[in-house]
Image 1 (tube, rainbow, N blue to C red):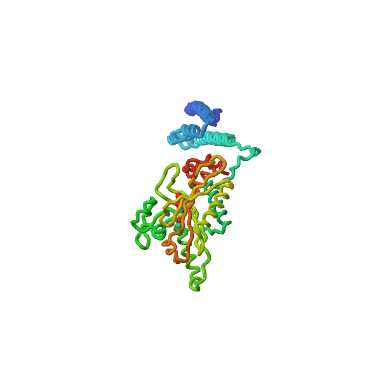
Image 2 (image 1 turned 90 degrees about the horizontal axis):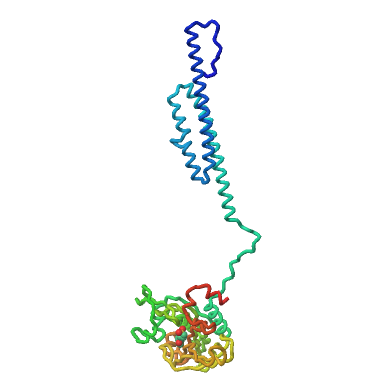
Length: 388
Ligand code: 2U9
């Protein structure tokens, strides 16, 4: 349309001449608007390129995009305006606008890529990894100091011929108390502030968190007696019971020297001819090995436990070192009560022996010079890492 000839045909009449003149004028006006339109489009593209280049964040770029290509964006508005034009104008202008739109979109895409690249570079820089640096390492863990003591205790008693028993931490009333000569409603039960579990055993009695490791020995001794019952029937002696029961125990108690969860290691030696003399020999040997010194004395002090009669507390005193000369209570012990031996399924007239209980937590405190038991169970690595 705008490429009409400027030459006037020679045969043209007046009316044709007027028409041709006005046509020329139209062409001129059309050319003027076309040029202006193209300049406007060029400017729009340049403006979009500049706006996109200014956006330094993806969000800013998307805002700039909306100003040109969004629903009410400048390019979109131009395309919408085509609706009012004639088909020829629509075709011509539409083509130009679409060409400009493609340039805007290309500029947008280029900027998007540049920003993504920039972001990736920033991230790589922030997370820069120098693979030539030496590794930080994780350090090696170590055994908890109380576990170390438990292992030492088991190894020492193992070397003297003691078996190691294991058993449940939730116990029946019979195994925790009655079998140990501590019947229901007996005042001696109040010696242990027991935790009870909201569940009952077959006899309808509340289960408990074992307040000592004795139930394990009851279970072990009963199994042993049953295993060798055939020898008994032939009048032959059963092999001796020699066992320790190390493990976690629970009582309602908490201060610098008591924890609601604590450890015990109890021991039991039953035979036809086992006496307090044997207990003293075993204990003296055990404490010398545990504390790695021959410089210690041992004494028994009369005491009371429902499951032993007679009963004694055991004290030791070091003859050198930081604890020199102080009597330290380290264990309880006694001759197993005949009622307890009977509850093993054994004849107390024939079988006799001793039992003892040591507190591995207390032994660990003495061995390492720790004065607050709670430190062992708080899980503070600054404390625990010292025992590697
Ligand atoms: C059976 C029969 C008797 C174990 C014994 C003690 C004395 C005792 C304490 C020492 C440190 C507990 O952890 S502690 O506070 N224990 O004084 N324990 S006699 O007697 C038994 C064990 C099992 C079948």
